[in-house]
Length: 264
Ligand code: SF4
Image (cartoon, rainbow, N blue to C red; front, side, top):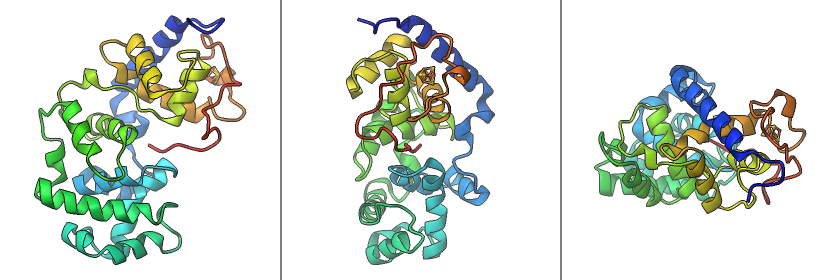
């Protein structure tokens, strides 16, 4: 049952309309720039392997910092050669950990990088684009991404969305895609009454109910709202895109990560 005072239909409609507006805007989507640094942005847009490394970094730190990391790693190592990444774990670890560290998970991230390089060489001929070839189905791409150390469902879903939306990958079955189980998305879903229970299944169900043909349409608008107005603390409901339809259940927080920033 909907939360008291919640018109889930109106909330869903508003998010879908916002999602369509963003999709039409195309080039001005926030995701169009992965990071403020022009060179770093160009690298993750133009180099498939760097994009995959960027996905590995997108956890527990700000998105802009995560997407700048492949470029900084390249600068520190002097290369992003997969064979060397795969064979020189100590160098990778030092490059990630050197102050200022490229990530706060200075033990895990280098392991993921080395593992990803090995996997790319062993299974994809050193070409990350073979993970998401033209015409491939999104579920298959997500499954392949999930096979990488350091990539869970959230990152895999996010990667597929970014591949399609920001890097122009032509994948089939995007309608099967859904929202990422992201802290911002979850907070907006909870506070707007789209969900009463914060579980991955409930988030996916709410997205599918709201936009049956393209659940993923809710992903970017929810994330943008979560990052801008529906902040963990002091949400700005009056300035929010959902302000007119949201029940403003602002006492609801995402458990365990209530005040942390998510990454994308
Ligand atoms: S900022 Fe307020 S109006 Fe907007 S989603 Fe959050 S609780 Fe709802």
